[in-house]
Image (cartoon, rainbow, N blue to C red):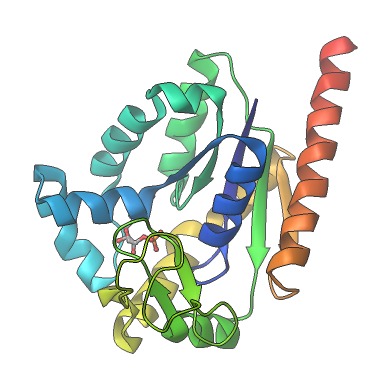
Length: 226
Ligand code: AMP
């Protein structure tokens, strides 16, 4: 059982790492962006309200996100633990998550911050392709699909996200700096924050995260015994 938050700018590798970590640990991979894109695709009320913000590269208002995440975290698979990817993204969201955890008498094991310089983020975001069917993520230069334009996992045709055009990417990075970066200090204060160099390669980052997660779990077990 473990609850992990992946934190980092768009393009830092949160999605790839959260998905690998969840698979390895048998926990749920909960990606707020994937849930939102699913709602947009299905034309739900939430999707209709969130879409204009997402298209501009702005954050969706907290109230919509908080309802959506409360619902998602209440699903049975989340009881086995989760890797959160893209949530929380504002201090208000982190506070809401904390009060939920407190209510449930649960705690986060670790918050992992993937650090990647902006030039590298811009390069990665322009080369990213995603599967609209199973949400798998590819990178043209380093993690290309076996067949060009086709998802290895499910065979669907890959797409480029609409919000990965250069002007929208700029808005997303600015929003990250303004709204999400303050979370680093928030989690530093709770001693949950672990910084990982996000440029060392997918496997090395995963190994590093694995090490942190193991240590945090051992530490938590030690605290319970003491
Ligand atoms: P992502 O796939 O994580 O990059 O998310 C795509 C878009 O969904 C973001 O640019 C936001 O518009 C929106 N979004 C996802 N997660 C959140 C969140 N926790 N708070 C606000 N907006 C979000």
